[in-house]
Image (cartoon, rainbow, N blue to C red):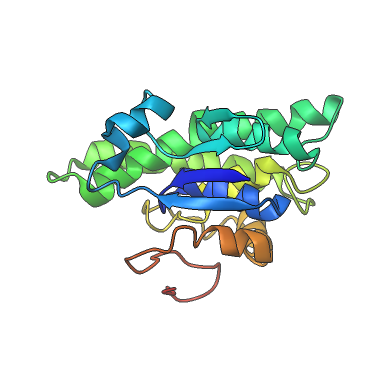
Length: 217
C-alpha cells in the first residue's frame, strides 16, 4: 500500500498517473497548497523541501519525494514502465528532459503569465518561448512514433502531465500536430485520465484536449 501526499498540479499528476497506470493500491492524502500544508512540520519531516508529491511505501517503509524519483521508484517496484538495458536510459533521458526543462519553463510561464501581479512582458515571452521550443522538441521526437520511446513509459507520463497544460501557460502549439496527437493518445488512456483527477480539482480544468473547446471536469 502506498500513501500519496499530493495536490492537483502537473507534478502531483505525475505520481497519481503512474500509480494508476501501474494499478497500485494507494491512499490519497490531499495537501492544500494555499493553506501551506506542505510547510507543516509533519510534511517537512517527509520532504524537507516542502513540495508535493511525496509517497510512503508501507511495505518497504520507504519515503520518497521529488516526482521523478517517485516515478522511478514505482516503476522499479513493479518492473513496469521503465525498461532495462539501453532502453532504460532512453526513457530516463526523456524523463530528465521534462524535469530539467519542460516543467521548470512552463512553471515559470504560469507564474508570470497567470499569477504575478505585474505583467512583465519580456519575462512572460522569455518563458513562453522557451516552453514552446521544448514542446517543439517533443513534437519532433514524436514524428512517426506512438510514444516517446519504444513503449509507453514514465517518460510519457511525466512530459504529458505538463505538455497537456500548454494553454494555461499561454503557449501556442497549433503547428505541432504530432505533439497534439500524442496528448490526445495519452489522454485516452483510462489510467492517465483518472490520474489527472487525483485529487479532484476544486476549480475548472482550463486545459484542452487537442482540437476541442475548453472543457471543465
